Length: 177
Image (cartoon, rainbow, N blue to C red; front, top):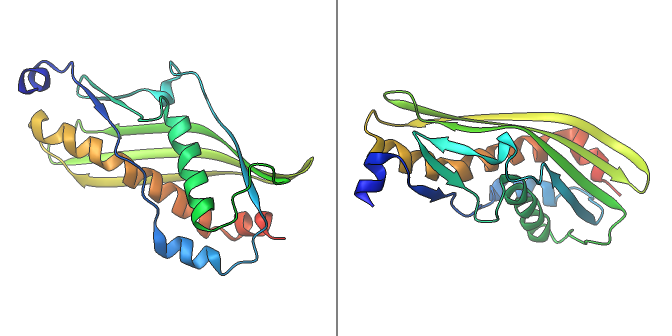
């Protein structure tokens, strides 16, 4: 493993997603209808947003693509809220526009994620909005320190993005009964 870190050919897996429970608790107080999660795009593993490199090492999703990671995070959150129903007429679709963890800095790493979210009820589009989240975390010049920190940050980046979505009144209104 140490040799792989030095040569930059190791592959790392993003950590499992964990929700921001305070945000979900706030969302639980809203009269939200049952929600389905449509497919999150792009599904092509070769798409640039589905490929993250950490100083020559690849960061992969435990679900195959980062689009599927986001899809599973949405499903997990809606299940936690007890509003998830794959057959619901209200559906959330998403397209990842930007998705990156940057550990090229000497002391600081950053993450950026931008996602276009659409909410449909039947054939009516109730929301089409782009959300962006950024994170900043302590990193290091040493790859053996920076790479695991970048790997660990991915879950925080997705949580930060979804927090912005869930706190947006336009998104809440689109999901209301």
